[in-house]
Length: 468
Image (cartoon, rainbow, N blue to C red; front, side, top):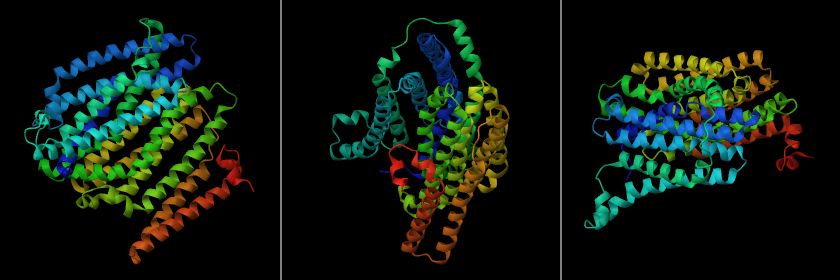
């Protein structure tokens, strides 16, 4: 059983709204924790103060959301399923309560438990979703008197996906109970004020960032070419399904952020950290340019991960979104300058610039160009944020990025993509398509390996493959 395009769009709308709640619920406390735990001698107080603050605010915000639940239901056009909002509120609360326990695992250098818990969360969500949507209806059909009939609701696909997410979030909190209860009932008011002053601009940056990352689905629902809600949800579904093909880069960026933030703060205490940041940026750009080619050149294969061929009409947004996410990943690297210099308000300003670009482009062009406007808005948004952060950051905290070389790498992979598209336009054979894609990918990897041979030789494990 699979979701129809309109139901997929409904689900995408809900999951586009959830990150906004997460930003408000966490209010930059995770980054503040990483920043202060490096320098402050009161490490126990930092975790305890942050946890008490987050638990208290989660209880308050959850209560407020339930009070105004009807308004949220109308805003997201979910009047037919108000319980979706209830589930989403609980998911947000549970995910918030695991934010600092996960941060503590990263800070304490315990990647194994961090990774296992994250993977279990994802696996449980997938397994439960499959059970609710595919297995449960089959069991009920074969045995209508089964005790499972008590939890079965026909055509409740989106609801079951959210329920699966809720169960997974609750399970994650249980798995992290040791880290969760690692705090002491000691609240350092002076320390909390310092952390809040540092973190508050990150709320604005995070909120604007969510506008850039997910709000386009909601805007597409509001301002799409069709006034029919079902048609609008179908457009959201197509765009969201195709957006997920940029997942390879997105997942790498998320994994990088998880490890990079504590690493960057620790490295700032060392000798000449700017040189280290520049090297990290170089290897990051090399990695994501290779990933761009892997997805963009083999799009004819990746498209089969979208189960409904009717959604393939939106595949033209994928290369645009891949580039946009490349820019976003570079921006996350660049953002270290304002976090280290305690100028987090700069991050808020930069992200607001991006949010303004997103809103203006989508408002002007969604009614005519539908999800294509969303893709180009995302591209323009992240591109502008990357450029502004680079120029501003070099004035405040100079890092010797090899920006000319890295720009050349990005331009080369884009030109390779266009070359591939031109060739397969004239020669439509599938074998020719894959052969050219493989040749271009291997050519780029060979080129970069030769240009960066000296730096690759210094890397652990892989370095031996570059020594002659």
